Amino acid sequence: MSKVFQKIPVTVITGDLGAGKTSLLNNLLVNNKGKKLAVIVNEFGEIGIDSDLVIRSDEEILEMNNGCICCNIRGDLVRIIEKIIKDFHETEQIIIETTGLADPAPIIQSFWIEETLIKNTKLDGLITVVDSLHFNRKKDCLHVKKQISFADVILLNKTDLITFEEQQNIEKDLSMLNPLAILLKTMFSKSNENLFEIGGFDLANALKIDPLFLVSSQHKHQKNINAVCIKNTKVVDGDLFNKWIYKFAQYNGKNLFRYKGIINLDNEARRFVFQGVHMTLDGRPGKPWEKKEKRLNQLVFIGKNLDEYEIEEGFNSCIQSI
Image (cartoon, rainbow, N blue to C red; front, side):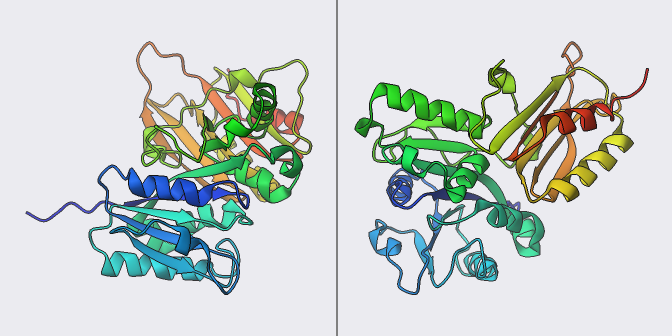
């Protein structure tokens, strides 16, 4: 009997310089749940450093130099993963550690638009390591904001070096930047949680969104990065929604970091789930609605200078008329 082909899950680790990305990678290598791993280490500059810091084991470690993985060498990422698929047949998980300056968006998009990656891999999730000790000094840097905004899991690292009050303030800032991410507090990037099966980019699981904790009369946002949440029980017209969301993404794609949602489309038996990064959008039917389940529309948009009124009005224009 032939072996059933399964796509290789990919975990992306990002975070600012010195946040603890390599420490996290080493921890994952040590506690690898018995998986056969392949690791791609990306270092900006012609001379690599990080790969020398990675604990050596049975895993295949490939290094990318002379460029940021999110920029001019994305083709190299595709070629390296092709090499992994061809030469290391037992690989069960790929981990990518990006440079601290990386913008996660092009990396994510690669797994949606590159044929080789679509066919052979699935993006499981993006983990962002945050340096709590230096967060207040670096939080206004655009690359830091983007790394946080795109995350499925945020490791608030070095919590032993700050006070409890400082930690609470950072947590508030992080929740404003990304209400969807799972927040884990760590020292030395060590976590007891399973970071190999995040499922953050797996639409087959149907997205779980609960943005209610964002509701606030103050509507305080982290500078020009904000999250807009919509939640109601209306029936959405499929044709109107498709026209609106694609047009909205095209016009606002540059400022749309990440967006996702579950909607009751045309009162179909299955919920419709979608997610997007900039202008790259993916959507499909999710799991069936339960008979007694409230059909709840839940949408979250994270990005730069998003107009809450415009988004709400646009979505409301897609509601079916009675």
